[in-house]
View (tube, helix red, strand yellow):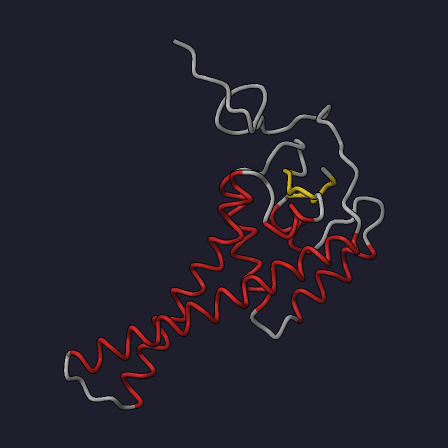
Amino acid sequence: MPEPEDPRHPGGGPYPPPSAPDAPRSRPADPGRRMLAFAVDLVLTLVLFYVLFLLGMAASYGVVTGLGLPDNLVSVSVSATVVVAADAAALVCYHWLPLARRGQTLGKRLFGMRVVAADTGHLATTGRAAARAALHLLLLVPCLLGQVASGILLLTDEPVRRSALDRMTKTRVVEV
């Protein structure tokens, strides 16, 4: 029996074809709307990070005191490291899972944009979505300077308007 067609990638198979020169080219998303979508996603991820951090630290304090461990700088540092790593994983998932499924985070959905593979115009593969999510987090680490540099590239890249993030993951953000 033939495999059912994946609606995310017309033409069959779980992944888009390696190259499709005749792939439909959607209009690149407006840089201002991309930045607004980024701001929405940034606020949501900061709130998510803060809430998870507070819950994680409260839970780790309960574990430390419940096990009778000393409540000192070492236990707090270990707890904070574990909680921050878990927070980072949650933030990557916030960007990765929606992009892999629909091509949109909540911010992109609100502003009518989608992330697609640059070569095919179809939704980005799961791997590209994961790489994009991980790079999002890495670009946030140095006080948003990576995101600022990426935004400058986005504004100067005519006519396709691809940011550093788009170029590194071979994706584009287009209007829906």
